[in-house]
Amino acid sequence: SIEVEQVEEGEWQVTLEGVDVYNPVKNEIRSTGATKVAAWFIDGDYDGRTFCTTQAFFPDQDAWEKLAKALGDVVEPEAFDAFKGTVSLPFPAGNHKRIAVKVIDPRGNEVMTTHDLTSVT
Image 1 (cartoon, rainbow, N blue to C red):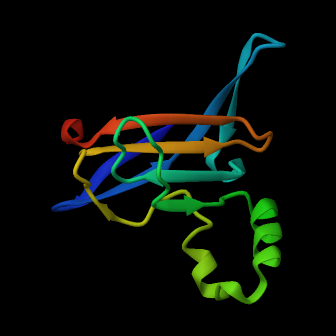
Image 2: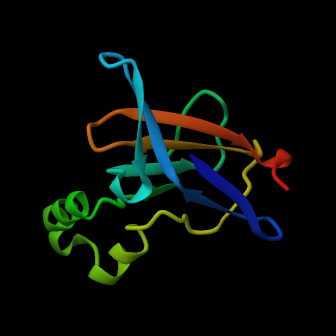
Image 3: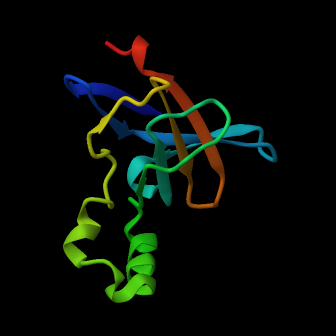
């Protein structure tokens, strides 16, 4: 689940709280806390058809260490800190006034949700 809030006039922020994934074999829903999510992505101006990543985060520290090592000197270590978390960077509402958030859990399951920014108070 996510929380979407307006942090200042025209600026929005998303907080990832976790993800629930349905297991069809056991016929149950499994909850994963936000810090165990492998990756999550935001489309800050979702048009309803194509997901375009505008922010990407990698909260699971095990997965993050592998990514940081693979990228090597491409990104400064201080820059990595902003993308380890479960709270997005502030962003402006786009033309469509709708966002999409895509979450990938530790097993590679992918889920997506959308939120209309005009309905958030």
